[in-house]
Length: 109
Length: 114
Image (cartoon, rainbow over all chains, first blue to last red; front, side, top):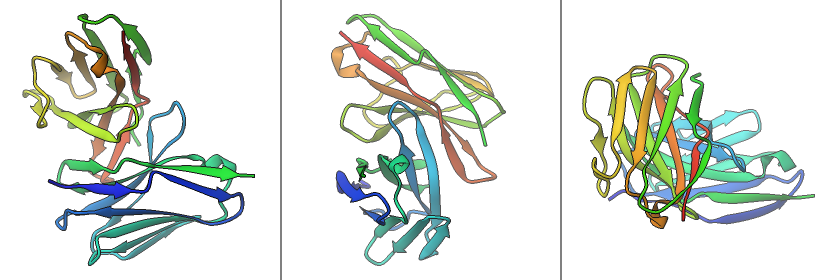
């Protein structure tokens, strides 16, 4: 079945860039998503990329997609303490969403 | 964007009892989804609830354990039946906006079963 993998933890210093990586197995994915989950809150959609794109930029967020390697990354520029959260990568094919385990981003002062 | 509320936000329940979680959306949506997030794990889709038809359950989930109602286009309930400690989890309701191709999530219901 489909599988999505992420590293579980990432620590960065405030002001540095964060790069969260994700690999997936379903080559027929149509959309790939990044969600943010802050403590005690539901998931928040950050951004998504259509599978025929290789890059998408949205303010401090840059998504890179390498479809050949089935690798997705989320870069957060100028990381702030408010960016501390769990970040979930998800792939979608039709109505079927498959989420990764989440990467816990800790931003150090 | 859709605004989703869930009730209750959290509950502590005894083994063997049942809990019904409500999900209310501020706009009419065709598809509503119920997810579970167990401690330390990612989200798992339980079922898809369409108005006017029976819910479609994912592998590993059955209607007897997780009955779902979808009486109209803005509301759904998920019941966790005959609970055991393994059902302790966050349960999230989600809707899909087909025009925006975005998925929106409710705040979740944190369930603890003793």
